[in-house]
Image 1: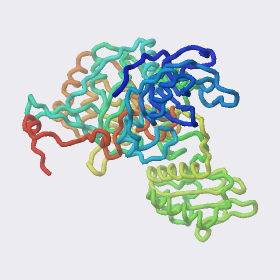
Image 2: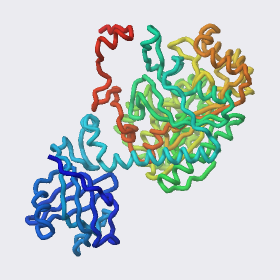
Image 3: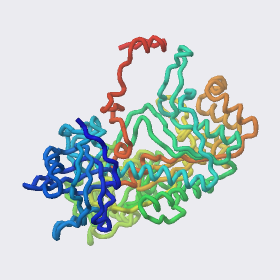
Image 4: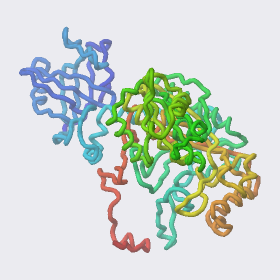
Length: 590
């Protein structure tokens, strides 16, 4: 039977040499038990730290006898006297390592079965097992540290926006389904048979309505839901810092977001960020880095060689350029020593990315050796190497093809080479704004234009002339904030004119009737004096993942789902009773 609780006076992370000779009461879990023959040592753990407790007959016989039964993860309460550890036994790795507690009273509050894996940071165990026993996994100090950092991030975010006159307003979790992007999670209505609510993919329409309502500065730390295929940095439910402002342009959003990042990094990792952050356009990001979320912690920048080879007799070059494609590549310093087998391996890699092949040039002091020597003149090879700023001992890698595809493959290859050569520095934080995204892209699958961001994003004023004639030319007033190759925030200046919003819906293949059905409330609101407005949403899970050095957002969420959207601990999703389905007028068809 569990014994009565002795109220704790200190946590397991509190005690220092200044507490010597003080009588204290600690509570927590037995981390480690060591019986050294006549003396029992335990490390007592709570979320604040660990303290060593010593049970010996000379301290208290009853406590010593009770300590014989202690095992890992027993929940106990200990009262004892703080004492200095003997010479040579100080543990410099623990903040409490100068002292221990001589146990005088011991109460076993609850026994524990042997856990399925050790409760320690360096545990090597399958993630599914950790998620099944998440309540045990959450006891590990590393996981607790991540969640405490998340807590601190919440508090600093709220304080920052409060100082800047933002109002925190909650928006509905049960909303109208307006699918335009990811798939909605639907919630059937019992009261209104055959009708459904949707869980919000974001509070986009609500926060714009709040701007119409006169709340010129809104923020919310909000749960969002998307029924989409998952990966390491995705979850069906995730958290974002949602922000909207009236009477602003891009600069105002940038300044406010940079201030938040500066505050969070100062408070969570003790780092002073330099602001403003650098900026590149979408087009520049693609042509320099092969991605719209570039990692700028290392070089290997891409260069366009199309002009150099446009008149080449090698048709792979000349015909690609003639047809509107590109020939581009980058230089890898000091890698001219790569063997034929290693180059073949890189060729196979880029083919797996979708490339037709890979062209290589080894630059050596007195000669150049390329994989296309039979087809391309020495002068052209030298001109390409010069364009790629290659020096003796370097390796040039090139790909040819359509603009988008070529740069995306080069971007993947760039990251792969940086990882293989260990070019990415640790503990470096590189922020970058990416601006001027395309407003629209044509979906071959749907045979219509779709919004690159969302249908409420405003086009650049100077590009409005192309909306009817050449929509692909229209740039959006959209922007992403990238950190170390991860998109951590995205936003835009919004459309606030109902006529322009209706025109945007038409371009997206959403007719007047469908627009009225899906977004009528918003179009109506815009008729009653909608202010110019814009905002941004910060991916909070991803930001905390980066700040705490984790590899997956699952490691910074208390109860995450697996890659197949399953909660292994409580077995959600799960079947429900037929009675519940009948009440909702739903029939499950297997």
